[in-house]
Amino acid sequence: LFYQREAGPTGVESVDDFCEIATCEYIPRALFIAGYVLVATNYGISALCLFLMYVYRRQEIIRVAQPFFLALVVVGTIVDTTSIIFMSRDNRDYSVQALDRACLTWPILLSVGHMMTTATLAAKIYRVKRLVDAGLNFRRVQVSVAQVSLFILLFVALDVIVLLVWFTTDPFRWTLKESSTDLTGYVNEAFGQCASEGDNYWVYPMAIAVLHVSVLLYANYLAYKTARYHAISDAKSVAICLFNSIQLLLIGAPILALVGDNIATSYLIRIGFVFLNNFGVLV
Image (cartoon, rainbow, N blue to C red; front, side, top):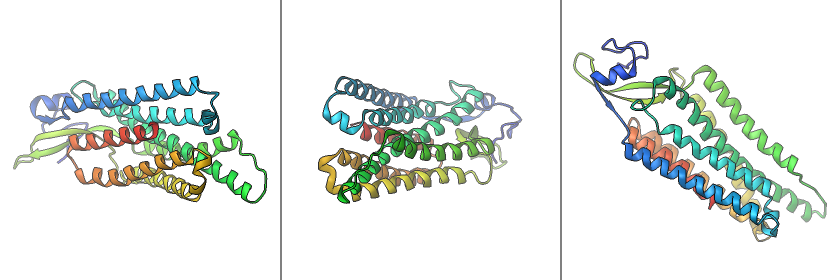
């Protein structure tokens, strides 16, 4: 028996009322504090990266790596990391309306930020491959910023389309789910989480996961094909970032599915994935 948004098993009409007469499970505040510390850490490293890029913008290593795309990668990590802030909320401090908005915000920031970073890294590897292939065939080719930007925009646009369809048809909302009931079906304990109400709630997250994994696999393939040229480009560091990202995604996603309704563990895995993925890209 699930607690509905309109009325629960006790006839109450709001999450706040329900948690006053029954036990609600919460993520420990210490974990929320840890989440904010991780956000501050990535923000600080991101700011340092942007500052150093500006200071050393005339250095050859920065010019070869293309400052515009380096900055885009950093912006992507900032967007992605910001999702932790909106994950770190519950009905102890926020209204249901504010939590509904947070439930819409953090998946968008997480998905778009991750795709910005991944697509930009993939585009940098793609550019190296185009230039190397042309050189091996004794052809001169120019891969402009506009061309590489279109590559990035294509994948970000696909990501946004899936998100728009998801959140206009079956959006995440803050809901209470029962974790303990008595013999009469009365809910004794419940916990809050962001969830879709439709039967096919898993379709859109799965579509986004498949899209992101596909881009990562393609980018890692390009990194493998250009491995011999890492000494003359920044492709080696990009390849390491991409390999780390796909490892985290392939390991983190199954673990997140296995923890089920353990909200504290689920939260810890989500913020750990976001932090480690972006930290690995930045450093």
